[in-house]
Length: 213
Image (cartoon, rainbow, N blue to C red):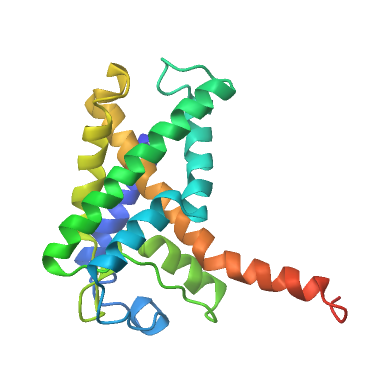
C-alpha cells in the first residue's frame, strides 16, 4: 500500500513538473472535456456534496475501499467479518462526507469546480488516463484545468478529523498516509464509475431491445 501511495505522489509531481496536468496535450483533458459551465453556484456546491457523499459512485467506491481495509484487517479493532466491514464502510462514508464539505468550502474561495466531466467518445486509453488525472485535477471558474488544490487540503484534513472518532491505531503517520492513498484511489474508482456506467447502461438497453444482438 505504501508503494501505491508513492506511485500516486510521483505521478502527480511528475505530471505537474512537465505541465501534463495543468497544460494538457491535445489528447488530454482540455480537448477531451467540454468547458464546464462558468457559473457553479452555492446550490451547485451543496448538491455536489450530497451526490458525491451518498450518490451511487461514492457508495460503490466505498464498497471497494472498505473491502480492502477488511481484507487488510485495518483497523485491527474491527473484525474481518461483515460487522467489521460495516464499521469500516460507515467510517469511510463519514470521512468522505467531511472531505467533500471541506473541498467544496475551500474551493469556493478561489472558484474551483470539483465536478467530474466525462470524456465520452474518446479512445479507451484516453478515457482511462482522464479517469486517473481527474482525481488530481479540477477546473477553475473559467473552465480551465488546474491542480485540485482544495482536494489536496481537504483529504488529509478530513482524515485527521475523522480519526477523532476512529480507533487510536489509525492516528499514526503511516496509517494516515495509507488513508490518504485510499482516498485518492476511491476518487479514481468513482471517476471510473461516472465515466463508464452510462456506456454500460446504453449497451444493456441495446442488448435488451428487440433488434439487439
